[in-house]
Length: 379
Image (cartoon, rainbow, N blue to C red; front, top):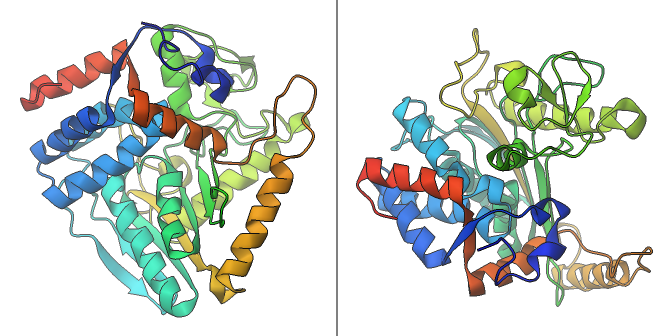
Protein backbone atom coordinates (compact mmCIF):
# COMPACT_ATOMS: atom_id res chain seq x y z
CA UNK A 1 0.00 0.00 0.00
CA UNK A 2 1.09 3.59 -0.49
CA UNK A 3 1.27 6.28 2.12
CA UNK A 4 -1.93 7.94 0.93
CA UNK A 5 -4.01 4.75 0.74
CA UNK A 6 -6.86 5.27 3.20
CA UNK A 7 -5.40 8.66 4.19
CA UNK A 8 -6.58 11.12 1.52
CA UNK A 9 -5.84 14.17 3.68
CA UNK A 10 -2.21 13.22 4.31
CA UNK A 11 -1.17 14.90 1.07
CA UNK A 12 -2.47 18.22 2.36
CA UNK A 13 -0.59 18.24 5.66
CA UNK A 14 3.07 18.84 4.78
CA UNK A 15 4.84 18.82 1.45
CA UNK A 16 7.54 16.61 2.95
CA UNK A 17 5.01 13.80 3.31
CA UNK A 18 4.21 13.73 -0.39
CA UNK A 19 7.00 11.18 -0.89
CA UNK A 20 5.48 7.77 -1.59
CA UNK A 21 6.83 4.53 -0.16
CA UNK A 22 5.43 1.19 1.01
CA UNK A 23 3.58 1.32 4.31
CA UNK A 24 1.72 -0.88 6.73
CA UNK A 25 -0.92 0.60 8.99
CA UNK A 26 -1.28 -0.15 12.71
CA UNK A 27 -3.87 1.02 15.17
CA UNK A 28 -2.74 3.33 17.97
CA UNK A 29 -3.72 0.69 20.55
CA UNK A 30 -1.61 -1.95 18.77
CA UNK A 31 1.50 0.26 18.74
CA UNK A 32 0.77 1.38 22.31
CA UNK A 33 0.79 -2.19 23.66
CA UNK A 34 3.95 -3.08 21.76
CA UNK A 35 5.83 0.07 22.80
CA UNK A 36 4.77 -0.19 26.44
CA UNK A 37 5.92 -3.81 26.55
CA UNK A 38 9.29 -2.84 25.05
CA UNK A 39 9.86 -0.18 27.69
CA UNK A 40 8.80 -2.58 30.44
CA UNK A 41 11.19 -5.21 29.07
CA UNK A 42 14.22 -2.95 29.61
CA UNK A 43 13.24 -2.46 33.25
CA UNK A 44 10.99 0.62 33.24
CA UNK A 45 8.32 0.63 35.93
CA UNK A 46 4.75 0.24 34.72
CA UNK A 47 4.12 3.94 35.34
CA UNK A 48 7.27 5.04 33.49
CA UNK A 49 6.53 2.68 30.59
CA UNK A 50 3.08 4.25 30.20
CA UNK A 51 4.52 7.77 30.45
CA UNK A 52 7.20 7.05 27.84
CA UNK A 53 4.77 5.34 25.49
CA UNK A 54 2.28 8.20 25.53
CA UNK A 55 5.02 10.76 24.90
CA UNK A 56 6.58 8.75 22.07
CA UNK A 57 3.37 7.87 20.23
CA UNK A 58 2.11 11.44 20.44
CA UNK A 59 4.56 12.14 17.61
CA UNK A 60 3.10 9.42 15.37
CA UNK A 61 -0.45 10.55 16.07
CA UNK A 62 0.40 14.12 15.15
CA UNK A 63 2.17 13.11 11.95
CA UNK A 64 5.71 13.80 13.19
CA UNK A 65 6.89 10.36 12.10
CA UNK A 66 10.57 11.17 12.58
CA UNK A 67 10.12 11.36 16.38
CA UNK A 68 7.71 8.50 17.07
CA UNK A 69 8.18 4.74 16.99
CA UNK A 70 10.89 5.29 14.38
CA UNK A 71 13.02 6.34 17.38
CA UNK A 72 12.20 3.34 19.57
CA UNK A 73 15.12 1.22 18.40
CA UNK A 74 17.43 4.17 19.07
CA UNK A 75 16.27 4.40 22.68
CA UNK A 76 16.87 0.68 23.14
CA UNK A 77 20.38 0.97 21.70
CA UNK A 78 21.11 3.81 24.15
CA UNK A 79 19.91 1.57 26.98
CA UNK A 80 22.11 -1.27 25.74
CA UNK A 81 25.06 1.13 25.65
CA UNK A 82 24.28 1.99 29.32
CA UNK A 83 23.59 5.60 28.39
CA UNK A 84 19.92 5.39 29.45
CA UNK A 85 18.88 4.47 32.99
CA UNK A 86 15.56 2.59 32.91
CA UNK A 87 14.98 3.15 36.64
CA UNK A 88 16.04 6.75 37.27
CA UNK A 89 15.73 8.55 40.59
CA UNK A 90 14.55 11.85 39.12
CA UNK A 91 14.87 14.66 41.64
CA UNK A 92 14.80 18.40 42.18
CA UNK A 93 18.32 19.55 43.05
CA UNK A 94 17.62 23.26 43.43
CA UNK A 95 14.45 25.33 43.64
CA UNK A 96 12.77 28.61 44.52
CA UNK A 97 9.00 29.23 44.70
CA UNK A 98 8.83 29.66 40.91
CA UNK A 99 11.94 27.85 39.59
CA UNK A 100 13.67 24.49 39.81
CA UNK A 101 16.52 22.46 38.42
CA UNK A 102 15.76 18.78 37.88
CA UNK A 103 18.36 16.01 37.56
CA UNK A 104 17.02 13.23 35.34
CA UNK A 105 19.54 10.58 36.53
CA UNK A 106 20.18 9.63 32.87
CA UNK A 107 16.57 8.48 32.48
CA UNK A 108 14.57 8.40 29.28
CA UNK A 109 13.78 11.96 28.30
CA UNK A 110 10.27 10.67 27.59
CA UNK A 111 9.94 10.14 31.36
CA UNK A 112 12.13 12.96 32.71
CA UNK A 113 10.44 15.69 30.67
CA UNK A 114 6.84 15.05 31.86
CA UNK A 115 8.13 14.99 35.46
CA UNK A 116 9.83 18.36 35.00
CA UNK A 117 6.89 19.91 33.15
CA UNK A 118 4.61 18.86 36.00
CA UNK A 119 6.96 20.61 38.43
CA UNK A 120 6.62 23.78 36.33
CA UNK A 121 2.82 23.46 36.36
CA UNK A 122 2.74 22.90 40.12
CA UNK A 123 4.88 25.97 40.71
CA UNK A 124 2.72 28.05 38.40
CA UNK A 125 -0.34 27.11 40.44
CA UNK A 126 1.08 28.91 43.46
CA UNK A 127 3.50 31.46 42.00
CA UNK A 128 1.71 32.33 38.75
CA UNK A 129 4.56 31.03 36.62
CA UNK A 130 6.89 28.04 36.88
CA UNK A 131 10.27 27.58 35.19
CA UNK A 132 12.27 24.35 35.23
CA UNK A 133 15.65 23.60 33.70
CA UNK A 134 16.75 19.95 33.40
CA UNK A 135 20.13 18.24 33.29
CA UNK A 136 21.25 14.62 32.92
CA UNK A 137 18.43 13.60 30.58
CA UNK A 138 18.06 12.12 27.10
CA UNK A 139 16.02 12.70 23.93
CA UNK A 140 12.47 13.62 24.99
CA UNK A 141 10.39 13.07 21.83
CA UNK A 142 8.39 16.01 20.49
CA UNK A 143 8.54 19.25 22.43
CA UNK A 144 4.87 19.97 21.75
CA UNK A 145 3.69 17.04 23.85
CA UNK A 146 5.26 18.49 26.98
CA UNK A 147 4.14 22.07 26.31
CA UNK A 148 0.56 20.87 25.81
CA UNK A 149 0.48 19.42 29.33
CA UNK A 150 -0.20 22.96 30.57
CA UNK A 151 -3.34 23.49 28.47
CA UNK A 152 -5.75 21.58 30.69
CA UNK A 153 -4.78 23.84 33.58
CA UNK A 154 -5.56 27.10 31.73
CA UNK A 155 -1.85 27.68 31.39
CA UNK A 156 0.49 28.44 28.54
CA UNK A 157 3.19 25.79 28.22
CA UNK A 158 6.72 26.18 26.90
CA UNK A 159 9.16 23.35 26.17
CA UNK A 160 12.60 23.24 24.59
CA UNK A 161 15.63 20.96 24.54
CA UNK A 162 19.17 20.94 23.31
CA UNK A 163 20.38 18.04 21.19
CA UNK A 164 23.52 16.49 19.74
CA UNK A 165 25.58 18.86 17.61
CA UNK A 166 24.62 18.52 13.96
CA UNK A 167 24.13 22.18 13.06
CA UNK A 168 26.71 24.64 11.75
CA UNK A 169 26.33 28.22 12.98
CA UNK A 170 26.08 30.90 10.31
CA UNK A 171 29.47 31.30 8.55
CA UNK A 172 30.84 28.02 10.05
CA UNK A 173 31.56 24.53 8.79
CA UNK A 174 31.83 23.12 12.33
CA UNK A 175 28.85 21.37 13.94
CA UNK A 176 28.13 23.21 17.16
CA UNK A 177 24.39 23.11 17.94
CA UNK A 178 21.54 20.64 17.88
CA UNK A 179 18.20 21.02 16.11
CA UNK A 180 17.10 22.52 19.46
CA UNK A 181 13.29 22.73 19.14
CA UNK A 182 10.91 25.20 20.76
CA UNK A 183 7.24 24.51 21.53
CA UNK A 184 4.61 26.90 22.86
CA UNK A 185 1.03 25.81 23.63
CA UNK A 186 -1.61 28.48 24.35
CA UNK A 187 -5.21 27.70 25.41
CA UNK A 188 -8.28 29.10 23.69
CA UNK A 189 -12.00 28.88 24.41
CA UNK A 190 -14.09 27.41 21.58
CA UNK A 191 -11.20 27.27 19.15
CA UNK A 192 -8.50 24.57 19.35
CA UNK A 193 -5.36 25.70 21.17
CA UNK A 194 -2.47 27.43 19.45
CA UNK A 195 0.42 24.93 19.40
CA UNK A 196 3.70 25.90 17.76
CA UNK A 197 6.37 23.17 17.72
CA UNK A 198 9.39 23.66 15.51
CA UNK A 199 13.10 22.96 15.22
CA UNK A 200 15.46 25.91 15.05
CA UNK A 201 16.96 24.34 11.92
CA UNK A 202 15.52 24.41 8.42
CA UNK A 203 14.62 20.74 8.95
CA UNK A 204 14.96 18.27 11.81
CA UNK A 205 17.47 15.42 11.51
CA UNK A 206 14.63 12.90 11.69
CA UNK A 207 13.40 14.13 8.32
CA UNK A 208 16.82 13.41 6.85
CA UNK A 209 16.62 9.89 8.27
CA UNK A 210 13.25 9.34 6.59
CA UNK A 211 14.69 10.53 3.26
CA UNK A 212 17.72 8.28 3.71
CA UNK A 213 15.46 5.25 4.03
CA UNK A 214 13.96 6.16 0.65
CA UNK A 215 17.27 7.16 -0.98
CA UNK A 216 15.70 10.55 -1.72
CA UNK A 217 17.33 13.98 -1.94
CA UNK A 218 16.62 16.86 0.42
CA UNK A 219 15.18 20.19 -0.67
CA UNK A 220 17.77 22.95 -1.02
CA UNK A 221 18.75 24.80 2.12
CA UNK A 222 18.56 21.87 4.52
CA UNK A 223 22.21 20.78 4.65
CA UNK A 224 25.72 21.77 3.66
CA UNK A 225 28.72 19.56 2.91
CA UNK A 226 31.87 19.45 5.03
CA UNK A 227 33.34 22.33 3.03
CA UNK A 228 30.31 24.54 3.68
CA UNK A 229 28.75 24.17 0.22
CA UNK A 230 25.00 23.78 -0.24
CA UNK A 231 23.94 20.16 -0.78
CA UNK A 232 20.79 18.09 -1.29
CA UNK A 233 22.35 14.79 -0.16
CA UNK A 234 20.30 13.32 2.70
CA UNK A 235 23.43 11.43 3.82
CA UNK A 236 25.54 14.57 4.11
CA UNK A 237 25.83 14.35 7.91
CA UNK A 238 27.48 10.94 7.58
CA UNK A 239 30.09 12.56 5.33
CA UNK A 240 31.01 15.33 7.75
CA UNK A 241 28.45 17.88 6.59
CA UNK A 242 25.99 19.78 8.75
CA UNK A 243 22.37 20.79 9.09
CA UNK A 244 21.65 24.47 8.52
CA UNK A 245 19.97 26.85 10.97
CA UNK A 246 16.44 28.04 10.27
CA UNK A 247 16.78 30.36 7.28
CA UNK A 248 19.44 28.21 5.55
CA UNK A 249 21.96 31.00 4.82
CA UNK A 250 22.75 34.55 5.90
CA UNK A 251 20.83 36.12 3.01
CA UNK A 252 17.69 34.24 4.06
CA UNK A 253 18.04 34.86 7.80
CA UNK A 254 20.08 31.90 9.08
CA UNK A 255 21.55 34.18 11.77
CA UNK A 256 18.05 34.22 13.33
CA UNK A 257 17.84 30.43 13.42
CA UNK A 258 21.37 30.33 14.81
CA UNK A 259 20.35 32.76 17.56
CA UNK A 260 17.20 30.79 18.40
CA UNK A 261 19.14 27.52 18.62
CA UNK A 262 21.71 29.20 20.85
CA UNK A 263 19.01 30.49 23.21
CA UNK A 264 17.58 26.98 23.53
CA UNK A 265 21.04 25.56 24.23
CA UNK A 266 21.75 28.11 26.95
CA UNK A 267 18.35 27.86 28.66
CA UNK A 268 18.32 24.07 28.50
CA UNK A 269 21.91 23.20 29.27
CA UNK A 270 24.10 26.08 30.43
CA UNK A 271 21.41 27.07 32.92
CA UNK A 272 20.81 23.53 34.23
CA UNK A 273 24.30 22.02 34.25
CA UNK A 274 23.78 19.75 31.23
CA UNK A 275 26.33 19.45 28.43
CA UNK A 276 25.93 22.14 25.79
CA UNK A 277 26.95 23.04 22.26
CA UNK A 278 29.34 20.52 20.67
CA UNK A 279 29.51 18.52 23.92
CA UNK A 280 25.81 17.53 23.94
CA UNK A 281 25.51 13.72 23.97
CA UNK A 282 24.70 12.22 20.54
CA UNK A 283 21.48 10.27 20.06
CA UNK A 284 23.00 7.41 17.99
CA UNK A 285 24.50 4.96 20.47
CA UNK A 286 27.36 4.11 18.09
CA UNK A 287 28.63 7.72 18.08
CA UNK A 288 31.30 8.18 20.78
CA UNK A 289 30.54 10.57 23.61
CA UNK A 290 32.37 13.92 23.29
CA UNK A 291 35.54 14.40 25.27
CA UNK A 292 35.72 16.71 28.31
CA UNK A 293 31.97 17.17 28.61
CA UNK A 294 31.19 20.21 30.78
CA UNK A 295 27.90 18.93 32.20
CA UNK A 296 25.56 15.97 32.63
CA UNK A 297 23.53 14.57 29.75
CA UNK A 298 21.09 16.52 27.62
CA UNK A 299 19.22 19.52 28.98
CA UNK A 300 15.62 20.71 28.69
CA UNK A 301 13.77 23.86 29.69
CA UNK A 302 10.08 24.12 30.58
CA UNK A 303 7.74 26.93 31.47
CA UNK A 304 4.15 27.14 32.63
CA UNK A 305 2.29 30.45 32.91
CA UNK A 306 -1.11 30.63 34.56
CA UNK A 307 -3.31 32.76 32.33
CA UNK A 308 -5.11 34.34 35.28
CA UNK A 309 -1.77 35.58 36.58
CA UNK A 310 -2.08 38.14 33.78
CA UNK A 311 -5.81 38.59 33.12
CA UNK A 312 -9.03 36.60 33.76
CA UNK A 313 -8.66 33.25 32.01
CA UNK A 314 -12.07 33.28 30.28
CA UNK A 315 -11.49 36.79 29.01
CA UNK A 316 -8.09 35.83 27.64
CA UNK A 317 -9.41 32.67 25.97
CA UNK A 318 -12.25 34.59 24.32
CA UNK A 319 -9.69 36.96 22.86
CA UNK A 320 -7.55 34.02 21.76
CA UNK A 321 -10.62 32.75 19.90
CA UNK A 322 -10.92 36.12 18.21
CA UNK A 323 -7.20 36.12 17.35
CA UNK A 324 -7.40 32.61 15.89
CA UNK A 325 -10.60 33.31 13.94
CA UNK A 326 -9.17 36.47 12.40
CA UNK A 327 -5.94 34.80 11.34
CA UNK A 328 -7.77 31.71 10.11
CA UNK A 329 -9.93 33.95 7.92
CA UNK A 330 -7.02 35.93 6.49
CA UNK A 331 -7.16 36.13 2.70
CA UNK A 332 -5.13 33.22 1.32
CA UNK A 333 -2.43 33.80 -1.27
CA UNK A 334 -2.96 32.45 -4.81
CA UNK A 335 -2.69 28.66 -4.90
CA UNK A 336 -3.61 28.20 -1.24
CA UNK A 337 -7.02 27.24 0.15
CA UNK A 338 -6.71 28.67 3.64
CA UNK A 339 -4.43 30.12 6.30
CA UNK A 340 -3.40 27.68 9.01
CA UNK A 341 -2.99 28.28 12.73
CA UNK A 342 0.04 26.61 14.38
CA UNK A 343 -1.17 23.18 15.50
CA UNK A 344 -3.85 22.78 12.80
CA UNK A 345 -2.02 20.22 10.60
CA UNK A 346 -1.02 18.06 13.59
CA UNK A 347 -4.52 18.18 15.08
CA UNK A 348 -6.07 17.20 11.74
CA UNK A 349 -3.55 14.39 11.36
CA UNK A 350 -4.29 13.08 14.85
CA UNK A 351 -8.01 12.85 14.03
CA UNK A 352 -7.20 10.86 10.89
CA UNK A 353 -4.74 8.51 12.53
CA UNK A 354 -6.87 7.80 15.59
CA UNK A 355 -9.62 6.71 13.20
CA UNK A 356 -7.69 5.03 10.39
CA UNK A 357 -4.44 3.98 12.02
CA UNK A 358 -0.77 4.96 11.89
CA UNK A 359 1.26 4.13 8.75
CA UNK A 360 4.71 2.66 9.40
CA UNK A 361 7.36 2.68 6.68
CA UNK A 362 8.85 -0.72 5.90
CA UNK A 363 12.39 -0.06 7.12
CA UNK A 364 11.04 1.28 10.43
CA UNK A 365 8.81 -1.78 10.68
CA UNK A 366 11.83 -4.05 10.21
CA UNK A 367 13.65 -2.22 13.02
CA UNK A 368 10.63 -2.60 15.32
CA UNK A 369 10.42 -6.31 14.54
CA UNK A 370 14.11 -6.70 15.33
CA UNK A 371 13.67 -4.89 18.64
CA UNK A 372 10.71 -7.13 19.36
CA UNK A 373 12.67 -10.29 18.61
CA UNK A 374 15.49 -9.10 20.82
CA UNK A 375 13.10 -8.47 23.72
CA UNK A 376 10.84 -11.46 23.09
CA UNK A 377 7.86 -9.29 22.15
CA UNK A 378 5.99 -9.88 18.92
CA UNK A 379 4.85 -6.87 16.90
